[in-house]
Length: 368
Image (cartoon, rainbow, N blue to C red; front, top):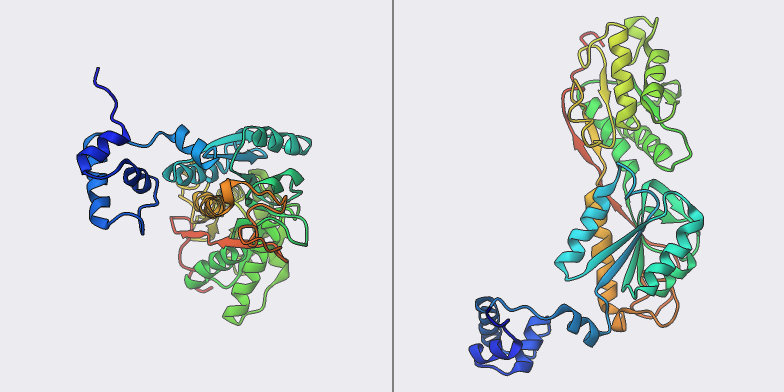
């Protein structure tokens, strides 16, 4: 069996010193090694199929090259796994691996899950939730650079940075889409107010009317819940026994399951979607929105994008903090952690949702 190539083999083939090979392949060549020599080193490494030993590199840098991810239910839930997928893809592209622990919605396990990951010498931590919500951040997350994804610190002061979906903008764009089709009598079936997503999406709906210079009919905004049956009963309340000119021509829903219930109610009443009533979902739920009949127009949650953005920000700080660890015990991936300053407010990065137009929305019915 052929012997595995070493850094010395690369150096000999490229005609440079071994230290030059180390500098270039560990990302520190600029300013230390001539560009022409850098190119020869990379070509030699490729020809010999050589890559640096990750374990040895970690020992030299005093980094584990491991990022710990704690989730409330993402691993064991059919929803939001793409957040972790996006985060993991970014981590791998930077030479890191991820280790994930799921607390299965048991908040009493949060701190111990974080401690378990810290015992494994992780370089940074991310907390991911199913559905947007405030998080009581485990205090031991402050020991390394840390960030939140799809949740935000419940402390009003100096909390951890968070990457969350721009729900207000999503609600505004959903309403704007059906308005562009001529609809003016637009209802909104919202989920309960236990999650911050529902009121933010309602705010966006109201914003769209404000931008269009039209008043909001508050009777058209109904909080019903999140499941198919809630959408069905909410739609029946809006449509059953109502004269055609008195019923809404479009119904926006706080998620795709509500939208399915609305479509079922329309069919029960002999109404066509979208000819009689346009129906708009939210989330772009996998294997639901696209395969529904008719396929649902919806706002796609930026799950993978949130994971990518959160991991990118986290790794930026991990690589900025000396040895990848925070000796001061301050908050992890806060804006001031890498510079040694104490942040005054938490930082939230808003990731826009994406409008997906399919078959469940169409022009306003004639005469309306």
